[in-house]
Structures are given as C-alpha cells and as structure tokens.
Length: 285
Image 1: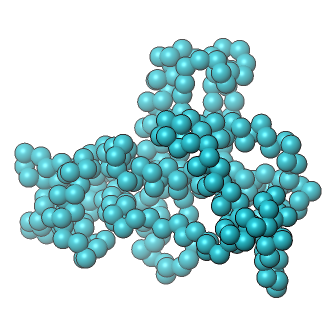
Image 2: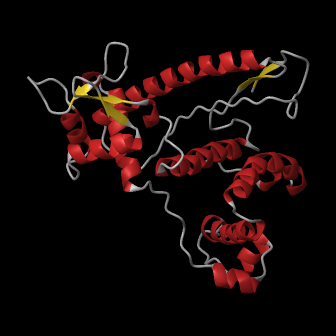
Image 3: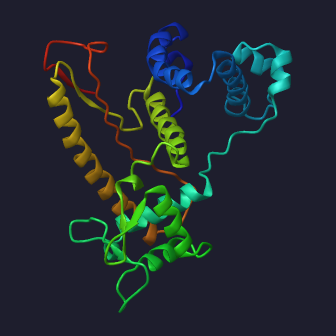
C-alpha cells in the first residue's frame, strides 16, 4: 500500500460531503433491514477502536488505550472495554468459496467452454473422456461429492439439468438470489475492495489502483436501459477474459500470499437527484 502523509490527505471537514453520499445507500439498506441507528453506532464505535488498534500502531511500541482514544475520540473507558477483539479475518464461507472456485474453473478452462468462451453443458459423469461435471468438481475439491454439489446448486438455482441429463450453468451463478448467503458476502467484499482502492488513491500523485467510471446524465429511460444491457455484456466479457488469464497464470506459477480483484459495476436511476449538466452530458473519470 502506498504511504500517504497526513498533509496530503483532505481535512476532516472536507470528508463530510463525500462520506454523506457514500453512506446514504448504506443507511437506506439499514433502515429497510431494520438495523437502527443505535445498533449501527455501536458497530461503528467498535470498528473505530479495532481499526485504530490494529492498523494505526507505531512500529516498536505497544498500542495504548490513550492513543486509541486520541485517534478515535472515544473515551478511554470505552476503548479499554472494546480493545482486544483481534483484527478481523476476511474469509469466505466454505460453500461460497467452493461454489466460486468451481464456477471460475468452468468459465476459465478451455476444456469446459466452447470456442466463444461460454460454459459447456456437462454430462454428470465422464463418457469417453469427455468433460463432465464430476471431473469439474474434482478439480476443485474431493471433500464433497459432485452429486451433493449438484443438489445444492439446483436448490439454489445455480445450475439446472437439461433433457439430455447435462448440467447447465444458470444466470444465478453470477447474480445470487436474495436469500443466498453469497449475496451478503460479495456485498461486503466487493464494496470493501472498491472503497479501499478509491481511498488509497486519495492524496497521492500517482494513484496506485485503476478506478474509473463513464457516466451520462439527461438520458431517457429507454437509453439508460439500452446502455445498461450493452454494458452488462461488455462487463461480463471483460470479467470472463480476466478470469481466464488469472486461471492460466495461477496454474503456471507457485502460490503466494498476494490477492487481486477486478470488478465492474453498473448503476442507473430515474430522476435528477444526481444530475450534473445538460441533457446528454457525459464524463469519464
């Protein structure tokens, strides 16, 4: 991570407006889900202490309640109560990790895709050395039987079995249904990494991470919908291409402890709440 001096960062007052914009959809989600302000404030207080304790220490010195209190503005008694929880470990639930790896393998390997890179429908079991769902699952894990994976996927709408008894990947593999645990996991992971990249780019002369967007205001609803459909295909093509390249590299090189993520988001809305110019005004940033 690039080191940034305090004098290169915006002062606290200048953060109010962008933070209000960032937090507004989070607050809307909290209210819709029944998470009240006192509950969120309690979570935020504990998070302030945890981040200050584990990420703002002075090399060679023990972190103290007084310093954490100074950094966070939280009184020392409350700091002492909240400290010691340990730094959070961002680990995907086993079922989420397993599903993601199998889907990534299916989309990345030329053995399981057609000439255009689309996932092939796979027989459940191998026939004449042809690719199969059983082989696909075995490449990722041998701890779970392929039949158990298939039953779970069918139940969650990730896969379906066609009239030829072949397993087909469904759209739900990329867009989990509302009650799927992957939805909350990816919500936290993707937003965490996007905000981390954007925050790291603030206050530095040469931003370390690519973080850009194209946006147009003053469009008709139909135009916005057409652009969304176009960008969905464009985005999925880019993600599949990046996945194939990462899959190829991962199979050629020794494993390490580095992590990489490449994400794409699309958003559209109706109304002039965020309008910033004349009809058709567009920007790339």
